[in-house]
Amino acid sequence: MNLNMRARIVAGNWKMNTTPEEGKKLVSEMIPMLSAELTGKVHTILIPPSLHLTGLISLFKNRPMNLSWGAQDCSTHTKGAFTGEISAAMLQSIGVSYILVGHSERRAYHNETSTSCREKILRVLEAGGCPIYCVGETLQEREAGQVTQIIEQQLSEGLPERLWEESLPFVIAYEPVWAIGTGKTATPQQASEVHGLIRQWLKIHSSAQTATTTSILYGGSVKADNATELFNMPDVDGGLIGGASLESRSFVDIVKACAR
Ligand code: 13P
Image (tube, rainbow, N blue to C red; front, side, top):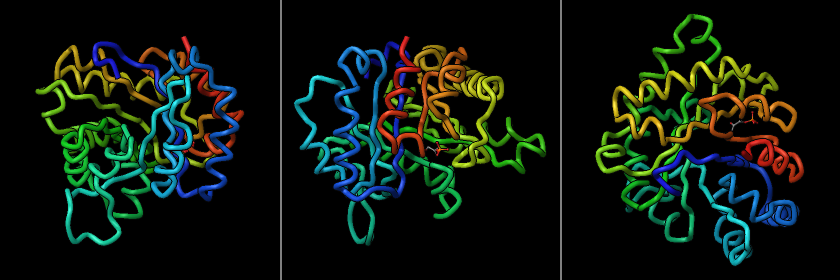
C-alpha cells in the first residue's frame, strides 16, 4: 500500500461462513467481474476463514487484478504453547497482508479488550503486515451519548504509537455494533460524524500526515444499494463488508461503488 496516499478500500469479511470449496466458487465468480482497472482504483481485500487462505492464495495468484488477502484475527503471542491460536507471522508467511484486529464479535464473544488489541497490532507490525483496527459503539452506548468517549478510548488504548513514530501502515474500520448484521445501517451523516472524529483524534495524537493518509472504512449492513451514499462522504474511504461479501455480484457492486 502506498503510504503517501489515502487508499480507497473494500474488504470482505466472510466471518465463519463457507467451506473451502464454497470459498473457491465465490472467488471464481468474482474474478471475471473484478477488472485490473477497478482493483487499481479500489484496493480489494478478501478475508475468508483462516483455514481457506493457503488454498485460495495459491489458486488465485498470478491474476492480473490486484486482490489482497486478510485474516480475521491473530494471536497476541508470537509462538509457543497457545492451542488453537494462529500467529501474525504464520499468516504473513502464506501471503496474508491484512489482519483484522478487535472486531466487535471478538470483543463481545472472546473478551477482547482494546489493550489486547494493541498487543495484536504489535504482532501484526512485527510480522510486516497491515492491521485493520475495528472500533465502534453499542446501541446502549450511543443512546447514552457516549459515542465520542467510547471511540476515543478504543483508539487510545488500542493503537500503539509505533504506528506513527515509524510511519507503519494501518487501517481503521468504524463498525457501530448496532449496525452489524442487523440491516440497520448508520446514516451517511452518522458515519461521517464518527469518521471525522477518528481523523481528528489521529491529527491530535499522531501527526497531520498520518491523519490525512490513513484510510477509515465503514462497516455495518453495507449493501450495493447504500454503498454509494456512504462512500461519498468525505472521511469515508471504503467499507468492511460482512453479509454482502458472501454474494459475488453484490460484493463487486460495492467495490464499484467505491471507485473514484
Ligand atoms: P454486515 O455487513 O453483515 O453487517 O457485517 C459487517 C461486519 O461486521 C464486517 O466486519
